[in-house]
Image (cartoon, rainbow, N blue to C red; front, side, top):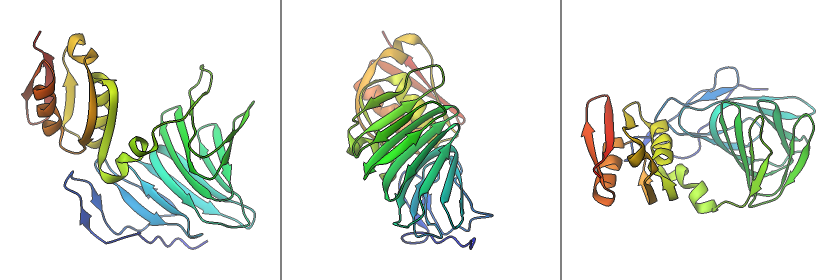
Length: 234
C-alpha cells in the first residue's frame, strides 16, 4: 500500500471558528488532528475521510480487506466501492461495509456509529447488528446497546465548524464545546449546569459561546486567559 495521503478541497482554508483545513501527509498510514483542527483526506483506495478535532485513525489495506482503526475522536467515512470489504475497528467493536457513508465517534470505551448512507454490519464479541441509513447505535461497556434515529443535519453540523444543541443541559453543551479549545469552559455550580438550551453554535471560540449563554440564560461569566467560569445568577 502506498503511504500517500491527499487532502480533499482547498489547501489552507481557515474557518472563522479557528479550525484549519490544510495539506497533510500520513505517517505509516496514521491520520490525526490536534485540538481545534479538522482535516479531510483521500485514502489509497479512494475512500474519503474527514477527521474532527483531536482524532487519530490508522488505515491499512491488503488483498482481502481494507481496515481503518479509530483510536479516538470522530471521523466521517465515505467508503469507496471495492471488492474488498471495508472494516472499521473502534475498541472491541467493528463495522463492516462495502460502500456507503458512516459517522463514527469514540470517547474512551463509548462508541457511536451512524449510517449516513448505505448500510453496515456492526459486530461485537457476542452480537451483530445491521445498521441501515439514518440509524445510529450507541455502545458502552456495561450497558445495553441503544439504537435510535438522530437528526442528521444536527449530527453533521460539526463538519461546518458548528454544534447543534436541542434542549440539552449547559453541562452537556460545555463538554462538547471544550473538545475544540484548550481554553476551558467551567460550569461552577449545579444550577448553571442543569439549565437547558437549544441552538447552533460555532466552535473554537469559547468566550463567544459563554457570552451568548449570558444573554439567553440566568448566568454570568468570568473570563480568564486559560478558562471561563459560568455561574448561575439565581
